[in-house]
Structure formats: C-alpha cells, structure tokens
Image 1: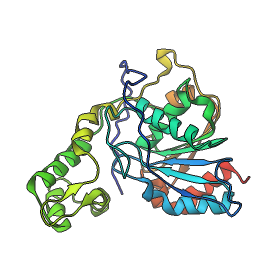
Image 2: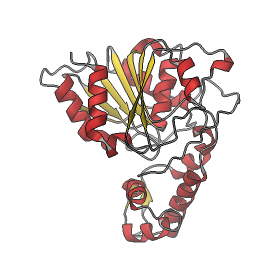
Image 3: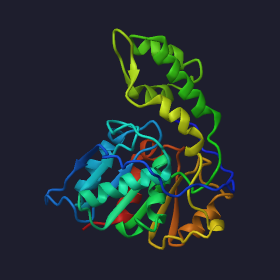
Image 4: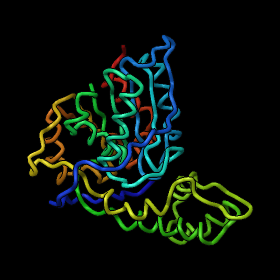
Length: 292
C-alpha cells in the first residue's frame, strides 16, 4: 500500500491558472460496450503520479460492460506513452484532458481521477473554459488542497535518477538502489513498472528530470474559495480510503465549497482505494454514474 504523500495543510499561495505550453496529444486505452457506442456518456479515467492508463485496465473493462458506456483511460503528460512536456501543472493537465474530450467528441462525460489525477479532474471541472464538458465528477482519495508533497516523492525521484546514472542493466540492480529509500515491495514494484531494462543502460519511460522539477508544483492546486473561484455545481463523488489522510477534516471544507454538489463515500482501505478494494470501489462508481 502506497503511503500518503500529499500534505494536508492548505497554503494560501498564488498559482497561475493558464499555461503557455503546447497541448499534449495524450496516449490512451479504450473499452467499448457491446452497443459499440464510442462517445455517449463516456467515462474518462486519470491515474496518479508515476502511474499510467494500464493501471486501470480491469476497471475499464468492468465499467464498459456493466454500464454500457465507452471508457477511456489516459496517460497524462510525462506518464505512460504520452509525450514529455513542460510545464507539468494541473492547469496544463486539465487543458490536455479537455482537448482529448473535444477531439474525440465525447459527450456527457463522467471524469474519474485518483490522487494527482484527482487534482487534474477537479481542475477540468473548475476551469471556466472546460467545466461544460462534464456531467459527473469522481475524485478518488485526494482533496483540492495546497501544500508541498512529502519527502517520499523527492526520495523516489532521486533514487530513480540514481538508477539511470548508474547504468544498471537489470531490474534487480534497479531494485537494490530503490530499496535504499523504500522497503515496501508494493511501492517499489509500482515504481519499477516505469523501468525499461537494457543491457547497456536501463532508463525510465517517464522523464525523471521533468518530474524532479515539477515536484513542488504537484503539491499545489490552481483554485481556492479564498481566491474568489467559482464552484462547480455538478454531481460530484469523493471516495476516501478510511486509512488514508489525503482527505481530512482540514481540507474537506475546501472541497465542499468548491464542489457544493459533492457527496463523500468511505471505503475501508488506504490511499489506493481502487486496487485495495476493487469490488467496493467499482460498486460506488457504477451506482453513481449509472447505466445508459
């Protein structure tokens, strides 16, 4: 089980809203229902930091089958097979996702995001330029809070940089370096899904240098009630792991102000709700999104 890495203290900082970078054409996987519907009532899923679309394969298949909806799982910028680009902010990620929705002609979208992906989906909903794209929003174990990431993430990035500079040729050698900062096998296995072993010099498919420069930004969030930001009034479901502190009594009021139509459900799990309790998680999502 991955440890909580987002802090829970909201900091009153000014965050730029829009970016000047080129929008990234995101890689994705898809699952279509038996009806062959590709656009109506689409479900779009965003992973967390160091994750990818393939983390959501089982849920994507289940949602398409059980809800008769098309399901798209995206690789966010600098993750999976999507292009590498800066800046890596929640505003740029929101722009990428919104462009994907428009490009594919998706309608009445239910947007699901876990952790970093949860902040990205909230940024789509709260952006005046994109909020009309969504019908429903599901935020998995993260709040719209501002604050630095924990030192764990910096340690992971440093270790991954060390793996690349050491020129290791096997996953075992990479694991030995990673275990200097992390002993939990669930975490090391997850991080090493990004490794591309090579006899000459193994590299990560994700741009570690960009992620290193983006760590501070990824702890932030571009919207806050105290900044006068308008809320998103659409149907919103927050799913919290009871053993996780990502959503807590300090940041929940902010979520309630920004998403007044929200309801909160809890699952007996840690931060990785969808993988620790897949049946319970899937049931909550399917009941909230509904059959078409």
